[in-house]
Length: 478
Image (cartoon, rainbow, N blue to C red; front, side, top):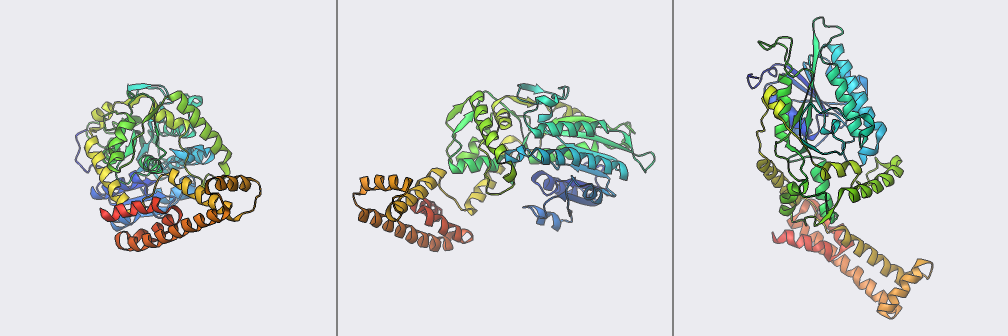
């Protein structure tokens, strides 16, 4: 396409579902920059890390749920174009909440489509996923001719629901409006690779969290395995171009938009091994790189164990005290089996070419995480936590709890090392006093070098002693 930079954007009204998210907020900002008359974002949240910035530039933030028809109608009334990004269940424990996954991804998409037909909206860009065609079997330089994966072959509810929703969107292309005679809805689907960039909420934070806890111990699959990634700015560009590809008044293509009814794979165009890709980030944050290699078969076995455990915990999955699972079967396939696709169709039809290289994108991501780490409460691995908490609890129980059940065994072990009850009690009191002294010292030091986290440093050091204090001393030195 040979269009101006702001074709179909200036003076138009846009709605972005999921607009307070990482990609949605970046898209809203870009639409405002390009001269949109009004940008609305529909999101279940009232605030996010980007909400203040969006409000400052005039984005209208509407709190609502795409699974509720009235919320969708309220947001979409009077819009010229809709970007449907809202989804649920992409990763972690959300993947197991099948009812909510279908409610948002399928029912929510139906509500968006109904509202588009009701209000005579002309353009709908749907954000889909590689998983509509991928279910664990190798794909090398795939393209849009790949068939949809059969419903029963999907490895998780998210992929299945997104496949159903994408097909609904594309089959609705060209459908006439209910009320505006002569107006048709034109639709297309963008299938992005794994998304990264400063502030990304799903993939990188989970990897960094596991590395921080010392739980990122193994790689999955062979070193030759490659997958696609896409930097957020490249994805936003693809979405903007897709909306232009749905314009029905372009000379030479009137009534026949080039992107109408079409899906497009979008990536940086540089497939890479996931663990090679995240290596520079982990090194920059001074985390250990995984050294053990786990083949896909054994990783799947581990993933199924976590799937079974978290299925049992289903009623409480929304609770914050339930941590994310280490890995699930669908995530094993994402990192352990080669699957990458060409963006050639998007290049030829939409004019898409990545504007940010993987090197530049990762550099920006590293800078973001280094700054974030410098402002956060840094702590030792989970092994230090277990050592300190279990050790202090064992000392206390041996010194002061009577010989009941397991406490009798703990006391016997303690007597073997310390020889007398008096020594055990002295050791516990000295250890507790050391923790208290270190916690007070940490609080005073943090008031100077990290005031925002002073209370956190106090409580963490009270529990862990020098295992925590050494991180604060390092921060003070730097």
